[in-house]
Image (cartoon, rainbow, N blue to C red; front, side, top):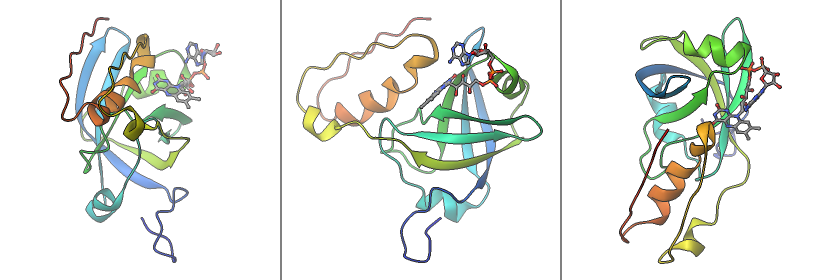
Length: 150
Ligand SMILES: Cc1cc2nc3c(=O)[nH]c(=O)nc-3n(C[C@H](O)[C@H](O)[C@H](O)COP(=O)(O)OP(=O)(O)OC[C@H]3O[C@@H](n4cnc5c(N)ncnc54)[C@H](O)[C@@H]3O)c2cc1C
Protein backbone atom coordinates (compact mmCIF):
# COMPACT_ATOMS: atom_id res chain seq x y z
CA UNK A 1 0.00 0.00 0.00
CA UNK A 2 1.53 3.42 -0.94
CA UNK A 3 2.39 5.87 1.81
CA UNK A 4 1.54 9.58 1.75
CA UNK A 5 4.38 10.17 -0.75
CA UNK A 6 2.94 7.56 -3.15
CA UNK A 7 5.82 5.14 -2.49
CA UNK A 8 5.17 1.57 -1.37
CA UNK A 9 5.45 1.33 2.40
CA UNK A 10 6.90 -2.01 3.46
CA UNK A 11 6.09 -1.39 7.11
CA UNK A 12 2.32 -1.45 6.61
CA UNK A 13 0.97 -4.88 7.63
CA UNK A 14 -1.52 -6.69 5.40
CA UNK A 15 -3.75 -9.69 5.72
CA UNK A 16 -3.10 -12.39 3.13
CA UNK A 17 -5.25 -15.48 2.58
CA UNK A 18 -3.96 -18.95 1.74
CA UNK A 19 -5.50 -19.86 -1.61
CA UNK A 20 -3.41 -22.93 -2.51
CA UNK A 21 -1.11 -25.37 -0.75
CA UNK A 22 1.51 -27.51 -2.51
CA UNK A 23 3.70 -30.07 -0.72
CA UNK A 24 7.23 -30.07 -2.19
CA UNK A 25 8.52 -32.70 0.27
CA UNK A 26 7.28 -34.20 3.58
CA UNK A 27 8.45 -31.13 5.56
CA UNK A 28 8.54 -28.48 2.79
CA UNK A 29 5.36 -26.72 1.68
CA UNK A 30 4.58 -23.90 -0.75
CA UNK A 31 1.70 -21.55 0.06
CA UNK A 32 0.08 -19.30 -2.52
CA UNK A 33 -1.27 -16.18 -0.80
CA UNK A 34 -3.59 -13.42 -2.00
CA UNK A 35 -4.03 -10.06 -0.32
CA UNK A 36 -7.40 -9.77 1.43
CA UNK A 37 -7.47 -6.15 0.18
CA UNK A 38 -7.37 -6.62 -3.63
CA UNK A 39 -6.05 -3.06 -4.13
CA UNK A 40 -3.07 -3.79 -1.87
CA UNK A 41 -2.41 -6.93 -3.94
CA UNK A 42 -2.53 -5.00 -7.22
CA UNK A 43 -0.10 -2.39 -5.91
CA UNK A 44 2.38 -4.73 -4.23
CA UNK A 45 5.72 -4.94 -6.07
CA UNK A 46 8.93 -6.76 -5.22
CA UNK A 47 12.18 -7.87 -6.85
CA UNK A 48 13.68 -11.34 -7.20
CA UNK A 49 15.70 -12.16 -4.07
CA UNK A 50 13.63 -10.16 -1.59
CA UNK A 51 11.78 -11.55 1.41
CA UNK A 52 8.75 -10.75 3.56
CA UNK A 53 7.84 -10.86 7.25
CA UNK A 54 4.99 -13.33 7.81
CA UNK A 55 2.85 -13.53 10.98
CA UNK A 56 1.15 -16.68 12.15
CA UNK A 57 -1.40 -15.31 14.63
CA UNK A 58 -0.84 -16.58 18.15
CA UNK A 59 2.67 -17.84 17.35
CA UNK A 60 4.82 -15.00 16.02
CA UNK A 61 6.66 -13.80 12.95
CA UNK A 62 9.33 -15.19 10.64
CA UNK A 63 10.90 -14.10 7.40
CA UNK A 64 10.51 -16.12 4.21
CA UNK A 65 11.74 -15.49 0.69
CA UNK A 66 9.14 -14.38 -1.84
CA UNK A 67 9.24 -17.51 -3.96
CA UNK A 68 7.21 -16.59 -7.04
CA UNK A 69 8.32 -14.46 -9.97
CA UNK A 70 7.75 -10.71 -9.51
CA UNK A 71 6.74 -10.61 -13.18
CA UNK A 72 3.51 -12.34 -12.13
CA UNK A 73 2.01 -9.99 -9.55
CA UNK A 74 -1.40 -10.41 -7.91
CA UNK A 75 -0.30 -13.04 -5.45
CA UNK A 76 2.78 -14.08 -3.46
CA UNK A 77 4.21 -17.48 -2.63
CA UNK A 78 6.50 -18.74 0.11
CA UNK A 79 8.12 -22.15 0.47
CA UNK A 80 8.78 -23.09 4.07
CA UNK A 81 10.42 -25.96 5.88
CA UNK A 82 8.76 -26.97 9.17
CA UNK A 83 11.67 -26.83 11.64
CA UNK A 84 10.30 -25.05 14.72
CA UNK A 85 7.50 -23.30 16.54
CA UNK A 86 6.28 -20.88 13.88
CA UNK A 87 7.02 -22.97 10.82
CA UNK A 88 5.33 -25.93 12.53
CA UNK A 89 2.21 -23.81 13.20
CA UNK A 90 2.26 -22.61 9.59
CA UNK A 91 2.27 -26.24 8.51
CA UNK A 92 -1.08 -26.74 10.26
CA UNK A 93 -2.84 -23.94 8.34
CA UNK A 94 -4.95 -24.67 5.29
CA UNK A 95 -6.61 -22.88 2.38
CA UNK A 96 -8.95 -20.08 3.47
CA UNK A 97 -6.97 -19.14 6.59
CA UNK A 98 -5.14 -15.82 6.90
CA UNK A 99 -1.63 -14.66 7.77
CA UNK A 100 -0.10 -11.27 8.44
CA UNK A 101 2.41 -10.01 5.88
CA UNK A 102 4.62 -6.98 5.38
CA UNK A 103 7.48 -6.23 3.03
CA UNK A 104 9.29 -6.47 0.76
CA UNK A 105 12.69 -6.34 2.45
CA UNK A 106 16.28 -7.07 1.50
CA UNK A 107 18.45 -6.64 -1.54
CA UNK A 108 17.39 -7.75 -4.98
CA UNK A 109 19.38 -9.85 -7.42
CA UNK A 110 20.75 -7.99 -10.49
CA UNK A 111 18.73 -10.08 -12.94
CA UNK A 112 19.02 -7.50 -15.77
CA UNK A 113 22.82 -7.96 -15.77
CA UNK A 114 22.32 -11.73 -16.06
CA UNK A 115 20.02 -11.58 -19.09
CA UNK A 116 21.32 -13.70 -22.01
CA UNK A 117 23.95 -15.44 -19.88
CA UNK A 118 24.09 -19.11 -18.97
CA UNK A 119 23.01 -19.35 -15.35
CA UNK A 120 23.10 -22.19 -12.86
CA UNK A 121 21.12 -21.91 -9.61
CA UNK A 122 21.83 -24.34 -6.81
CA UNK A 123 19.64 -24.46 -3.73
CA UNK A 124 18.82 -27.12 -1.18
CA UNK A 125 15.69 -27.65 0.93
CA UNK A 126 13.85 -24.39 1.59
CA UNK A 127 16.94 -22.68 0.10
CA UNK A 128 15.38 -23.50 -3.26
CA UNK A 129 12.84 -20.72 -2.65
CA UNK A 130 14.90 -17.85 -4.05
CA UNK A 131 15.87 -19.88 -7.13
CA UNK A 132 12.35 -19.86 -8.60
CA UNK A 133 11.91 -16.11 -9.08
CA UNK A 134 15.51 -15.76 -10.22
CA UNK A 135 15.00 -18.37 -12.96
CA UNK A 136 11.68 -16.90 -14.07
CA UNK A 137 12.83 -13.29 -14.27
CA UNK A 138 16.27 -13.82 -15.79
CA UNK A 139 15.47 -16.44 -18.43
CA UNK A 140 13.04 -14.66 -20.76
CA UNK A 141 13.27 -15.05 -23.71
CA UNK A 142 16.14 -17.53 -23.39
CA UNK A 143 15.42 -21.21 -22.92
CA UNK A 144 15.09 -22.43 -19.35
CA UNK A 145 15.93 -25.95 -18.31
CA UNK A 146 14.97 -26.68 -14.74
CA UNK A 147 15.83 -29.78 -12.82
CA UNK A 148 14.31 -30.07 -9.41
CA UNK A 149 14.50 -32.88 -6.92
CA UNK A 150 13.72 -33.15 -3.23
C1 LIG B 1 16.32 -13.55 4.73
C2 LIG B 1 15.77 -14.89 5.15
C3 LIG B 1 14.97 -15.61 4.28
C4 LIG B 1 14.44 -16.85 4.68
N1 LIG B 1 13.66 -17.53 3.80
C5 LIG B 1 13.13 -18.72 4.19
C6 LIG B 1 12.28 -19.45 3.28
O1 LIG B 1 11.98 -19.03 2.16
N2 LIG B 1 11.79 -20.63 3.73
C7 LIG B 1 12.08 -21.15 5.00
O2 LIG B 1 11.60 -22.24 5.33
N3 LIG B 1 12.88 -20.47 5.84
C8 LIG B 1 13.40 -19.29 5.48
N4 LIG B 1 14.18 -18.59 6.35
C9 LIG B 1 14.37 -19.16 7.68
C10 LIG B 1 13.14 -18.92 8.56
O3 LIG B 1 12.99 -17.53 8.84
C11 LIG B 1 13.30 -19.72 9.86
O4 LIG B 1 13.30 -21.07 9.49
C12 LIG B 1 12.16 -19.44 10.82
O5 LIG B 1 12.33 -18.17 11.42
C13 LIG B 1 12.13 -20.49 11.89
O6 LIG B 1 11.11 -20.13 12.83
P1 LIG B 1 10.50 -21.23 13.81
O7 LIG B 1 9.75 -20.49 14.87
O8 LIG B 1 9.75 -22.25 13.04
O9 LIG B 1 11.78 -21.97 14.42
P2 LIG B 1 12.33 -21.81 15.94
O10 LIG B 1 11.35 -22.43 16.86
O11 LIG B 1 12.76 -20.40 16.19
O12 LIG B 1 13.65 -22.71 15.82
C14 LIG B 1 13.64 -24.10 16.13
C15 LIG B 1 15.04 -24.66 15.94
O13 LIG B 1 15.38 -24.67 14.55
C16 LIG B 1 16.63 -23.99 14.35
N5 LIG B 1 16.48 -23.30 13.06
C17 LIG B 1 15.95 -22.07 12.86
N6 LIG B 1 15.95 -21.80 11.52
C18 LIG B 1 16.48 -22.88 10.89
C19 LIG B 1 16.72 -23.21 9.52
N7 LIG B 1 16.40 -22.37 8.51
N8 LIG B 1 17.27 -24.43 9.21
C20 LIG B 1 17.57 -25.30 10.20
N9 LIG B 1 17.37 -25.04 11.54
C21 LIG B 1 16.83 -23.84 11.87
C22 LIG B 1 16.77 -23.04 15.53
O14 LIG B 1 18.14 -22.76 15.75
C23 LIG B 1 16.13 -23.85 16.64
O15 LIG B 1 17.08 -24.77 17.18
C24 LIG B 1 14.73 -17.37 5.99
C25 LIG B 1 15.53 -16.65 6.85
C26 LIG B 1 16.06 -15.43 6.46
C27 LIG B 1 16.92 -14.65 7.42
